[in-house]
Every structure is written in structure tokens, then in C-alpha cells.
Length: 521
Ligand code: V55
Ligand code: FE
Image (cartoon, rainbow, N blue to C red; front, side):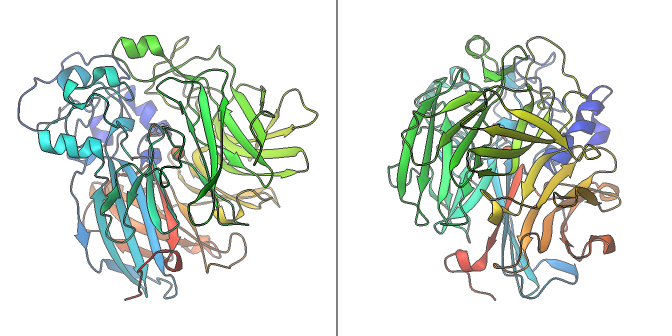
């Protein structure tokens, strides 16, 4: 991929590029500006050669192949008692865009889900597209019918009013269902073993009030319940945010709709035992840009970002929007509350972290876009604004994670995707304030997911799992497992894939005991 990109593109790639989106996805795009030499439209499936175009450049920028590989080749010491599935999802362009939309951004690719089913030291691999309304319509038409990222005015008239969701960002196993998310639509429900699409628009039995759903819901470890939200909840460009909680069986028992100061990207949120913590970034929905045929968002550094806090289970009237140092935060690492005092850790930059969305006031700045762990603190009862402190200043990265069994609670271990040439997976110890980096020489690593050594293992006792791309082998993929008890020894085990796997944004680990029908072969 790198060799296909010229000059200034290298900065962008060095910043987030393949490190963020994993194998096969070049994180570039012109965000609404037409390419100088748009490819001619024809009936043939012919992706543009220009790597800046949607799905363009080397074939590794897309995959499009639904695969099954029974009994992959494994190396090293796969823990025989590890029994579960590692799921991943990312955008994988189904069709080239119509010529005038070739400048669309990678975030608009159709969601391609992959699964490594791991049991008894054996690993089976399977991938399937999320067959939602958009995918099926385009499959039948044998061409792209949707225009720019989250801009329905650019769609083919034949798909007017159809769900535009791409199911390409993150997935969760909850109440036995694999739910695949894109933040502008309800989830797609897929079978967690076959990856067959069961419901292209899952609404929790009709009880989801929001028209949208975050890619980053949370599971409360105390109850097993699912807490999620949607922004632009009551319609395209609406300022409404819906927050809900479902029990461990997926029954929504709390749902409240509140209003944000403006419509902007709210990618992730934090749930504590007592509070919901929203974050509105100044990646603002831009009606004028949308009307002009561009992408949904424009970065507006003059707008304040807001931390929105309300009690869980209330009617939403206690919601307070706090301002603070105007940081562009994207992913929550962890958070908790101690009485009315709330702490939330994010990865975040001083400026826009997404170079492919247009900026209103200034050119994209790679230094301001660089992510660090930002600890936000606020007293719900007494503060007028929130405070921020940068933790682990020696570590720069994106896509922060934790041992998800400790979300809502005080936590010790955090993980971060480290950007730059010596990239890898950072392991952050909040108790000692120390950090380590797990890396594999010659490999570029995608986002990692924490895997508990056993379902009841102590916090942080387990593994990090994720994909690596071998730079010397044209990006050929290994599934890599580090044992957190001994990262210095390098990967404890690998799956050697015979090809470059489909790219990803995020991944999720599910234990076999939570997957209906999973029998250890
Ligand atoms: C993100 C990803 C998206 C999106 C909005 O990583 C935000 C953040 C893959 O799509 O549409
Ligand atoms: Fe995300």
C-alpha cells in the first residue's frame, strides 16, 4: 500500500493509515472534492487506479472475497483452553463509486465481517459481508447506488429512503446475537457462527427508539446489560441523542432522548455505574457541504466540544453539557464515578484526528491530530467545566481499549494502538504509571482486543489478539496472540494466513460460553 502513495500522502498514512484501519484499507480520500481525473463510468466493475479514490489503487485496498478456511495453519503455543471467537469488521468497497463520487472516504465502504473461531488450538476463519439493504440493492444492480459518506442527496433515486448503513465499524456479541454497527443506522444482526445475516436492521424487537446506533455500546459487567446511544436519533441532522439500556437478554428497559448543543460526531461514550457520559466533537454535521454533494462532516475548530453527563435511569432532564480544553477525543479507554466525581480516559488530539474530513478553518495538522491518553475529570454536582490531564505522554496512539469486563469501574490496565514507525500495542498500567509496547518486527499491527485468560480471570490477566501485516510479504496476514504475562518473549502464538486478510476498524472477543451453538471441535 505504502508504495502506491506519493509525497504528502505519506504523512497521513504515517499518522493513522494502515495502523488504524488495519490490513487492506488505505485511510485516504478527498472528503467531497472531486478527483481531477475521475474514472469513466461504465458497466464494468473497474476500481480506479488512483489510490486516493474510493477503493482505488492496489487490490490490497479492498478484498471483496467472502472466505471460509477450515483449520488454518497455526504456529507457536496456542492455549488449548482458549475457546471463543475473535470478530473483526471494516469497510470493504463493494463497488467502485459513480465517477462523481470517487472522492468519497474509506469510512463509506460496505461492512465485511471476519471471524477466527478458536478452540483446542485449532482455528477456523470465515468472512461474510453484512447483507443489509444497501448491500443487497447494490448486489442486484451490480453497481454502486450510494454516493458520498452519509449524504443521501447523492444516492441513486432507486434507493431513496433505504437504510444507508454500512455496518463497517464495530461488532458486539450480546444476548447471543452478533450485532454489527455503523453509527448512522441500527445494527445488523448476524449469526455468530455462520455470519449469515439474520436481520438487516435489528431494533431490539422494535424497542430501539433511535434511528441510529453507536458503534461503541457498552456492557455493564455488574448486570450483563447493554447500554447504547444514537445521535441524529430522530432524523438526519437532528440534534437529538437517544440513550438506552437493555438487560442481558436484550430487552430495552430504559430509553431517553435528549438534545445536543449541535449535530456533530459522537463516536464513543462512557458508562459508569451511575452516569452516562457523552462527548460531542466539533466534527460538525454540515448541511451546506451535504447539499453541495460532500461528506457528512466538516471539522470546525471554532466550535466547543462538550462533555454531556446525566444519571443512568433518569428522564434525561439532569443532563449537563460541560466544556473544557477543546480536545478531539475519539475512543474511550475506561471510566468510572466516585459519588458525583467522574473520571473518563480517552484517546484524543488537540485537533482533528480524521484527515480525510474537510477542515473549515485550517489545513489538517498531523501534530495536533496526534492522539494521547486524556483523562477527563468532572464533578457532576459542583463543576462548571471539566479538567483534562495527559497520561503516558511517552505514548502516542489511537483506538484505546481496556479489559471490557471492567468498563464502568475503576480500572488498572489500558491498551492503545501506537502510531508511527515503531508502532505496536501499548500496555498501560494506571497503577504504576508505566507503559510497555508489544510489537512484531516487520509487521504492521491492526487494533488489538483483550482476551481474558479465562472468563473469571483477574483484570488484565490474559492475552492481546489482533491482525498483523507482514511488510516483507505484501501485507500477508498473521493473527497474533501476545500473552500479557510475557510480552517480552514476542507473540506466544500465530495463525499464518495464506493471504492478506480483509481490513478492519475494530475487533471483539467472545467467549464460547456466550455463543449459542458453539461446540468445541
Ligand atoms: C469512525 C469510523 C466510522 C465512522 C465514524 O473511527 C467514525 C471512527 C468506519 O466508520 O463512520
Ligand atoms: Fe471506533
